[in-house]
Image (cartoon, rainbow, N blue to C red; front, top):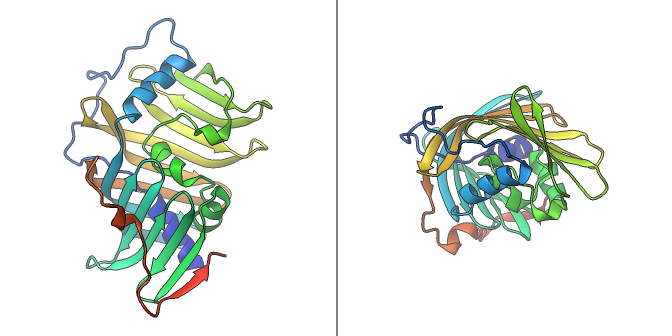
Length: 269
């Protein structure tokens, strides 16, 4: 199960940008902040950027470092709004090593060489057990693409804005006042620099640092480099993006897994 956990964890952490896309600089501002900037104004800009994204096809190199060692692989990623996800691990010669397919109901992990499929409910608890990320399926692509607004399921109250080390710090709490998420945003271009997601007891579970932003379109910046720390499993993931196709046509069949005859199907532990 160590292999299942490490491989699936690497697969999850893929989002894409075009390798030849223009890099953002301070001379190419996405938005100049005003004196009356507040949390909702910042979030409205993130909403505007994210809204056009309906589908994604990407390729990336992912390196995972944990107590079990260091694991590097090439990954492909297919995503369609709101909660269709397919992640494939490729071997040295491009052969399929593992596939993870998920929707809002079920997660399936397929090992073709072993002829084994693991299946389980698509809940944050399931993804936490398998991948280390306590996220719902529909949260994966938005958060890793740098969209900082938590999903409606988080039941966030009105966020509030602070200044931390010259960055805008947006703090998201629930109706009971418990901290759900912190997001640090560059005040010049309103790009995400870091996001920390917390448990109900304000314990950090996912810590993401974003960098090397490039434009997929004139108004759609995406991080080319991610460093992700998962404190509960003491695992670091570094991602280098190679290519992306934003809003490609993805047939529904690519998000459906029909195990070949003879493949063993087991419940996810």
